Every structure is written in structure tokens, then in C-alpha cells.
Length: 221
Image 1 (cartoon, rainbow, N blue to C red):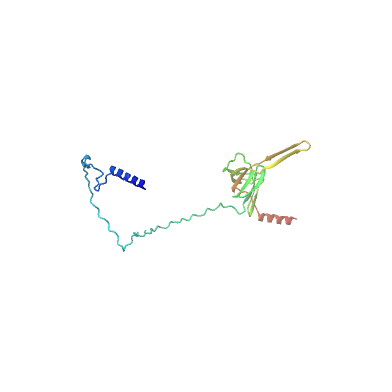
Image 2 (cartoon, rainbow, N blue to C red; image 1 turned 135 degrees about the vertical axis):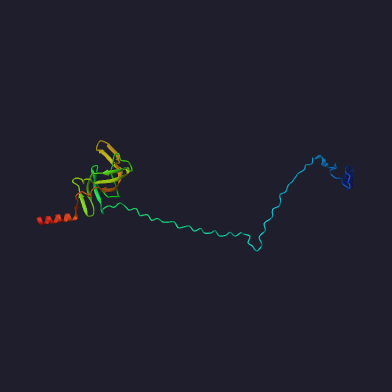
């Protein structure tokens, strides 16, 4: 206990010799601050006249400005021009023809398309004319060619150059181990019939003529 007291007294004595406590502390900066060290600058400021403030809306008025409703602009109604409907070409009811293309005969109707043998040299959208017209018929009359209806023409348009479905050709020889399988697609042309013209001046046969011929045959018999 005595040794601890001696140690504390020694520390206090040492602290007193090195530190001095004063009740009037000095300022931290002892030197006076000289303002003349910095050069002075003069500034000239100009102020614009103050603009008058807009009056604030009263408490009774709505804070949201109400815009006037836009005036409805009355436009004149557009003039509707009634165009006449496009009428299809007038054909005799039941009009058809029998034409020969290559070595085959086809029944054609205006406005319809058919697939025929390949037409060499014909391209898509080409206009063609078929002159081998063997027969022209309607609901009331018939024009029979001998062998063709003179001055009669069938006009058509080439739509597509295609191929027929594939046909398998199988060759076989017995006892020879010979077998061959070959596929073939025949080229064709699709055409659309536009019109049948030029048959009006050809002699025609009507139902009345046929009935008269039947009556004459009955009388002769």
C-alpha cells in the first residue's frame, strides 16, 4: 500500500514540473492576421429593375386553370361517288367450246382454267389464241365444225408452267436379275380461258331444227 502511494506522488510531481495550468488561456494564433497581405479588388455590380410579380389566385379560385373547350370544327361531309360495279363480260348462257391442243381435245368455258400439254415457247402471262375450235355450244344452239368452226377463236392466258404428278416406271426381266425403277413427270401448262369469239356467223343448229328433223324421220318411216 505504501509503495502504491509513493508511485502516485512521483507521477504527480513529474506532471507538475512539465505542465503548467493557467486560468487565462492564450489564443491559439499568437500572431495578428494582417489583411494587407491580400490585394483588394473592387467589384461593380449592376442590378436590373425588379419586375412586378403576378397576382396570386385567390383561395376561392381553383388552382388548376380551366381551359376553354375546343370548338368543334364542323367539316363538310365527304361526297361519296357511287361507281358502277365492274360487270363481267356478257357471254351467252351455257357457252362452251371444244378445242384441240396438240393431239387432245378439251372442253373449255370462259373464265375457267384447264391444264393442257406443255406449250413450247409460251411464258407466264402470255396471251395465246386457239384456232382449232371443233364445236361451240350454248343453252339454245350449237355450232358444229366441219371439221372446225371457221373464224372461231378461243383466247386464253398462260398462268403456270408445271409438271404432272410423278409416275413410276418399273422394268423387270425374269431370270436375268434385271430391275430398273425410273420416275417421270410430264410437263404441262395451265391456261385460263378469257373468251370465245368469232362463231356467230357460222351456221348453227337449234333445238327446233333437231325436233323438225325428228318429225321428218318419223314421217318417212
